[in-house]
Amino acid sequence: MYSSEITQASNFVKGVDTTFLITLGVSFFFLIFLTVLMLVFIYKYNRKRNPKATQIEGSTSLEIVWTVIPLLLTLLMFYYGWAAYKPMTKAPDNAMEITVYGRMWNFMFEYENGKRTDTLYLPKDKPVKLNLVAMDVLHSLYIPAFRVKQDMVPGKENNFMWFEPQKEGIFELYCAEYCGLQHSYMYSYVKVIEDSAFQSWMVDTTQVVAEALESPTATGRRIMQNIGCFACHTIDGNKLVGPTFKGIWGATHTVTTGREKREVEVDEEYIRRSIYDPNADVVEGFNRGLMLSYEGQLSDEDVENIIEYLKTLN
Ligand code: CUA
Image (tube, rainbow, N blue to C red; front, side, top):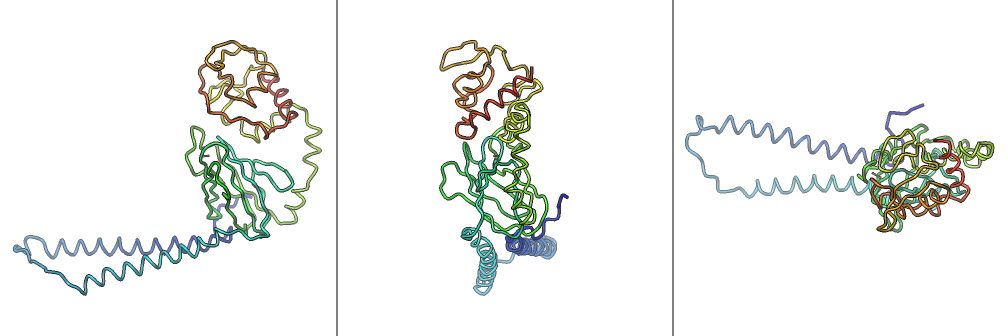
């Protein structure tokens, strides 16, 4: 059920589209008007018809006309833009809050009850406030179908966007600010469902039960998928921004620790350190400072599951 129609998917669609069409209309009018006027002048006042140039001293009424009309048109465009923008700056008090974490290079959504996903699930016809947290560099959350886009600025307080989804369906969501090599990986979906379905999804424990039944390796893989590991690390031996995970367990890596070069064996301690303090040991041939610590985002149990999964890649 993929909705490609982009009309009225949120409460802001109408205001933004009206502003866009008015601005486009004014621009289009002037494009045609000026082009035609230019062609008329070229024809009427060319050298053959007017061998002698005429000196025009100025016209006050003409000056007034071409000052007042553009002023009114500019104010018209401003008015619609402002009217559409103003309501975006204040979220209703009853809005459901979701925290969006953006990092190089994925989004993670955290709900009021602590549930985390990599796809944004939303109830239809309920105001939603997204609190935006940029963990490393500038990102920008963009949901074209809802006509909302907001920069995610590291350290900025009160960085949010809000809207009310008004249509069920699946819509695209992506990062609209170039944030490094794998910027294009910051691509996900918004899934808008009926409020009742959303409520049961929120408290759904089948997922928790399914997770408990999952093998640690499957859990490890899912965790890594959700937090975006595979944006930078492959499991097939190809080199991306970070080293591949293929055959990593027990392998010997040449790393730079501080200024010293040394050989380390990949064991639990090394993997744990690479996740919590990624720049402590930098593998030869890769750059320092590209990975951010996952401290506070992953529990010890999560890391254990990740280690179990990595062991299977040999
Ligand atoms: Cu994040 Cu581009």
